[in-house]
Length: 97
Image (cartoon, rainbow, N blue to C red):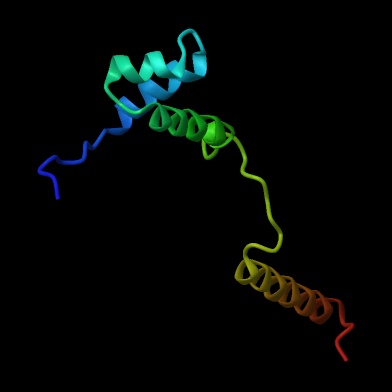
């Protein structure tokens, strides 16, 4: 076993190098040599950025898409509330059986 330790890169460094690769001004080999990382690693960071770019702004402002099947407890609560209102209206109108 060799005495060299594996390098650990922070998220900011990965983003910086990955964005540089996405821009395409320099080749991946040039970018890797400048920053002292392996070209395969630069390619992986670039791929990761491109894959996650679509979800980057999720969860920001605006209404979230409503998934009617996502919260059954809320739906059961709504059903109970509407049933109680219906029973009350029947009672008040004299339609109770």
